[in-house]
Length: 489
Image (tube, rainbow, N blue to C red):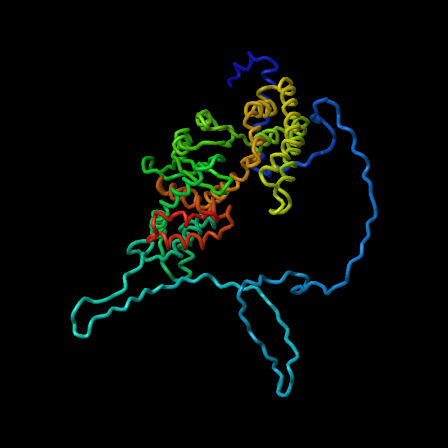
């Protein structure tokens, strides 16, 4: 804003501008130099506590202590592997090296042995898989030569086996090794595999996986609950030589399977998700990005909100309005405490959806009423353009969406699990920087879909990809569900 225009503003308008600029500067410094985690530890000073009555909470009662003693049965101490360390994993193969004493042991009796274990590593080795097909002919020379047919191969007339294709894929998209680094690793094995060749193998492998990826999309869209988010990716574009184009991965997570798919689009416009979600019916849980707004007006589609995004707004406002931010973070923390209770300390302790619904109705609904009452009051006490004013307005504008998770025990309070699935993309692009083409970005989305779903299902990704790349060339389309990375296909 030009100085001449500033002269015409009121004192309140100038203060709002100063607060907004101060918040933006603080946020920028945190992004560049500070810790990005949103962990919050309450100070417990009682400032600005939220309550429908407006009264301060009562001081906590003094802690009651008691002395507890118990008896235990003496037993054999648990075996340790020296110095209190845990034993090395039992599933690893053991290679024994026997060291005999230098002294002459003739006539001595062996009374035992000392065993020392060390964890060793041998780099993965390339090998040549030879497919030998004997040829037979009749002794009298009549008839044709008999030879076994060549089995289906991942890439017709290509040289890589399914394991090598899977390795190249996962090295880039799980271990974040660009093709040029893999080229250097192969050179240490005295094998030349140029990055262009690796790119060709990736394309061939993804051509095989395309029908399976399409079926995974169908399965994810078939239920009535989805989470959606998006993340940018730089892409080389022949239409703009010397520069990269900013495309987007749209991620869709089905928490009920669970599974995730990534869909590459050249822009962040609403056209991408509208086309992808054309057949979807149910709750679509998103942040407040306007690109989903039209979809959320479709018949049969209901909006779900993300409390993590709302919480983040208050966290970012704490430097300029600590008291209100602390009050908001405390009570939102109580909502998440209910979710922790429903989740349990161990997987087997997690409440089933119907029990989680009852717990939320009993404990979360009253907390939500407190939050809403506080927001309705404080929105009139803050400057609209301040960080706190924007946090309150943001939360009020999506309030109906935020309440959706209370209506069904299957629904999540936020999109954090989807953001976790997106995180490998952010880590990867710091290493491989950009996709080589729009088609390459689509193939990347496909691989991230399989890898992300494997992670959610607890499936080892290398063995899965090696197996499906090996089977897909001759696998009947009618039984393709058997190859999906879902434990219940």
